View 1 (cartoon, rainbow over the protein chains, first blue to last red):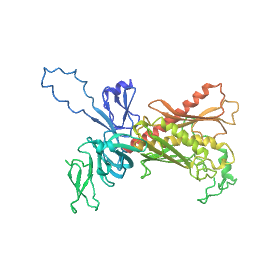
View 2: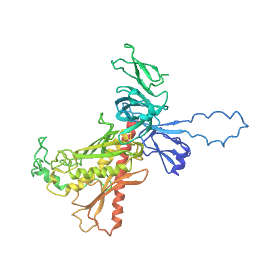
View 3: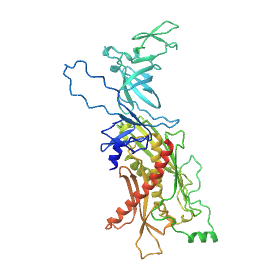
Length: 216
Length: 287
């Protein structure tokens, strides 16, 4: 009885951990929720948000084309977000996230980095990452040299490819838009990128090798 | 307990002496439980008391009307999720570590600065109670520290001479720890399936009525009862209707299964009462 009334009722605006939000047939679970016995429950303390699915593209133009059976209609996603003043939720790097990190040290086989920013959020905790030599770029992997790709102190944009081992997340820069975005030269000046593998010092005019991220 | 870095207070009881006078005579006479057997004491709960922690909460359970009996005061802080130390092995889920510490002045007998077996015990039971409520696989490779300091340990000053009292005090302390840690976890924004709360039930025998059978009360204060035969502390999830931790102490005849179930039921009832306070407190913070 209680579940049937909840199924018809709109979800609550505020939620506590363990509070019923609605049936799993009506909503998709978003962040801050969990599913238990085909019902959605909140797992956080905060406000409830329901986001409608992005509109599917209009009917297929070529009706003669054989298409698979239409996918079941997308359900709205329900999520619980903590909105306390001065608080933000801790974020963990996840596989597929784009992160910004600083190179700490390099060895011939890998570069050790500290992950600073995950997506749009600045991380509170210090997480360590590893860019292995085979993950630096997509082509000519056997000719990659770490010291021609990164130097300690560089700021690198990278993608998380694995949770890694106990200490490190494994990162990759094997895409055009990934790589070093901010580098300082040996004389200590901030350099600008001139090609996919070179930065130039504006004062001395010397060029240094890096795995350069595509600026635009 | 040789802690050379600090100037330790004297070992043993350091309570001020209580002299026999008319007032105490009178007080001894009213040594009776003033609440109905199924009512818990009033409690005060507040989250967000420690700004530097990810989440924190403070719990205070009121004293009885009698002077000289202290209440329970707990302060809990949650740190994390943060990265695990380099030496620890890979963990696909969150690693919980709980620390419960009595303040040196919290109980009649002065406590040391190092953790003693009782505090370790409380920490282990607290971890078991919380593990059932947390969705740990949402936080791979991370650790959370839950630190509880017991500022005031719910003890009667006048009963320090009775040994074995402490074992019943631990029950009340654990149930308070569970409730306050649950509030602090919600404040820290760590995913939980439900709000877990603790409750205590005890089987007590009053000396006046030896003929009658012992009865079950919730939230017992050892100084209010002549003899506690057994006690149980329950950590309970109300919407799931699940128990995450159950701790029995004392002597119960093994043949009377009904007594065991009744005590657990009463413990759940006490936990539901505590949960109402918890819900109210959490609603206030987001409302």
